[in-house]
Image (cartoon, rainbow, N blue to C red; front, side, top):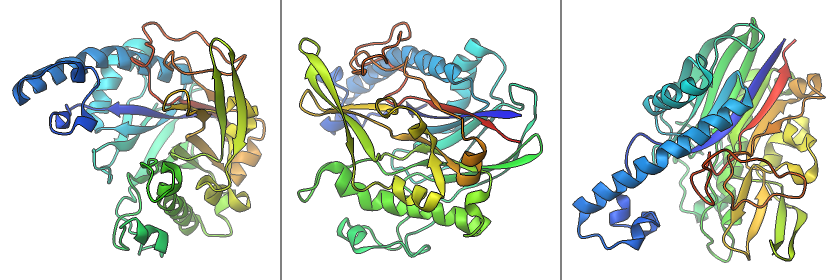
Length: 370
């Protein structure tokens, strides 16, 4: 009996408009920045038109990427709320793949923009085994003090012991698949911040992600017991906003590109995988073929990296030793630089930068649940 699980950062699945760009130029869309706008009323009208015009194409591409995962269970990030998720599923996914993801769950987290993690599930697997929702537990309320995770590095960032650990949530979903228990932990860790104090954005924000990773492990070990936790049936899915390896891109389309793997000395991912607690099964893919995001700030700073993870408990990974995840990249914009041999046919109407399915790629894996 098999179950197919996917994780996908949908990139701002919103059901409201963001007008903050009128007063904060950093939030203003680049298309509106081309025009002289008289007042806030005109700005709001133009922003609504721009957002609606872009959204339809973008969400068709998002739906295509989701359909390509063929997942029974979808763990999602950057969902505004259940109303937005239901509207997307009915207006886009349903029209594409028909009756499918009937059950949807989310909880309000800590993100300042209101984007949350969520899950969509079929009621049975592709092979007809029932998928039963048992319970949902939010861990958004936990503070650094609760788990003894406050550090001088966090204090230097202005973070207090009573502040909440998770920048969004660690949403715990208990299921039964054909009567067999399975627990999902859906996460979306702190994004890499702007550089500060001589550190790059990844290094500067690392203390928060390290604490989030420690908190996830603490939650799992508290639930199942420190000695037994790794052997139980659970999966961590989501956007960790961190990597322990990347592929640096040099060159250009005329002279040719060069792709160089690079290892990172520190990563919050290591907190979770240490001691064989769980496995990043995407690392079963070839070294140049593990990326889920293309990062660029122009020709001088480009790399491919994995930000999106399906981490299997040691027991579940051992039982699925031959399972190799798939990464859906057909929704990537044309600006994304692909290593040789990885080129794909992109979905119709994909743009150079936008519209696109998301800036992230969905990751999916089929698991034997026997």
